[in-house]
Image (cartoon, rainbow, N blue to C red; front, side, top):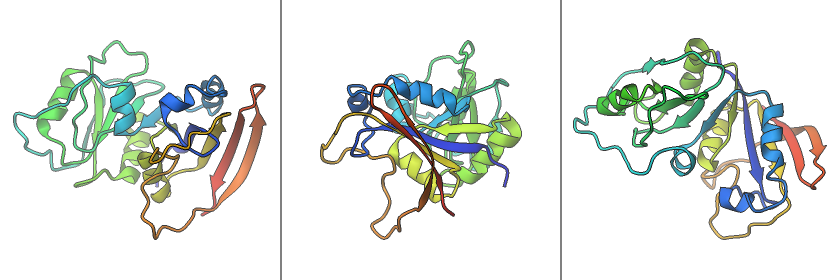
Length: 226
């Protein structure tokens, strides 16, 4: 299968929590982008919740004609070194016009997305991929990213459910964790990988590299053992 080299890169508290408002307050946050740059992954991928909180416009798209696309397709608006990729299964996030962005957006949806939403993305000059009948086929989406968008290295940067989806699909080549100096401890907060069923077995990993930052943060790099 053709796919990019995929790294899951996250900053966490000591107890493995990833809430951005929390991690922004603990020592080590300054090293997050330094460690991300060292991974040499020009394209990054986020889940819908992260996209909604940090990138998208306020509000939700409502289709006038809810007719689903019903087939695999893609639209490439620009060739670039790196994309800001967001997973949005049904197509509801709102965006500004993308034509002048240095790092343009690319939206991945399922084939259940409305044609109205894809027309909306086209009007904003935003590239998109639609694959998977009711939920996104991540493996196929990664093939399209490689073959049609020339993405060779990709960093998956959260949240917990999209990280888990890539892990369960066997798509991660590496797991990169920057551990900051703080503890969250709040009940119900998301962790690096989240949403597995209670029957899920642990995933074994092998330690690849350890780096200590001057402020006390620790950067750990692992490879999943298949």
